[in-house]
Image (cartoon, rainbow, N blue to C red; front, side, top):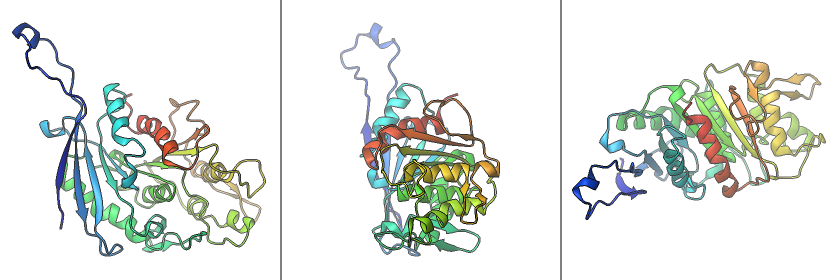
Length: 327
């Protein structure tokens, strides 16, 4: 069952009351209005509760026939905190990005169960440990639901562009880990990934810093995998997210974990574990300094950024320009 409730947000209006006939013939500034459709969706395979999904429709959607790219986002409850609507409105006014439909999925009651990694081929979750317990126990079920239930639903009910390159998945922290997973496991569905502060520290063995370094799950997924044709990825990491340095290379772990996934690293056997670069992806390791340098995967280091919504709000505009910029 699906329950719809449409909420209209008027972001910019033009009032013509009292305008003289000669003035009415002058051009009128464009209206930047959008609709938010609120849904409650069933996902009994992994969620006893119904899942709240907000669909943000772009300006002019109701008045046209145009089809739009779609940005899916984890942690939909954070959209106000990261300034989604205000950022979109500003970028639309600047004509910096093309219009996009945003589908924001609220976190599950048990957030740590769904936001993780999976193996599509074997239909299983790849569970890692953490200080709060297991991470990703239902990651396969959640990822499969997004790719095989939510995406077809959105395509059936909204005017979307129905190709992987027109679909992106966005997330932060554990939600970013899962966003990467969706792109990696379902490249035939999701063709773009935005991962802010991804939890690439997730490992199979947490008994020591060395064991964590050598059993990180996302890095192993890339090392043992192959290039996903057409998949492009944008990673954002704050330079002040933490101070830990488990491998003693002078780079904090949050930055290091993403760099290792991009460029590879020395594994437990002394041989170099493969990163995206070794799989044939072109890499832009300094998106902040060279945003126009086109690459399959890019790293944006947010100066002074920490692990919170305020920093992810700062990362959102450059990501949207990367994903939907008018070139």
